[in-house]
Length: 203
Image (cartoon, rainbow, N blue to C red):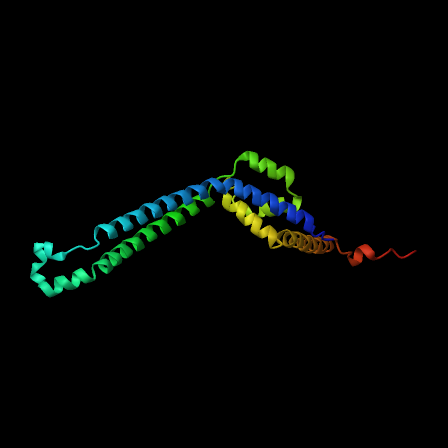
């Protein structure tokens, strides 16, 4: 008989795993927020400073632009703000691409962060057997220590009902194994030959 995991245990296990994940992730998340905030703030100040310094810029002062003619220089002066705004926008796109690459790399590294032995001991003492079974199922390679990605996957699988599926799979395997064992036992029983079954006739 399959005993489904109780909703109370599932909630408690999910809460404990979520707390463990938060304890593992808060420092890397804080570092990412600080890095992105510093870069974004510094670039914003650069953009504001550049737009202020280039406001009212007269292109006639650049001798090497005189070959464009006075009309072209006057046109450049009128659209001066847009020129610098577009230039800063293009550079901003490159900076955003760099930030995105940094975040992707940082999150990939964070998923492989190892879980300390003390946390595994805490989980072993407080998680239900069903949740520990899910954690063991998620932890495929037993030669590699459990990492943050395993914890996140365990939490998702636990919420999706993986514990019940594992219990059902074991019950199905037990039924099939029992049927195969019974068939093997039946095949192994020796059949009686006619000479064994015949009785001697009385004289």
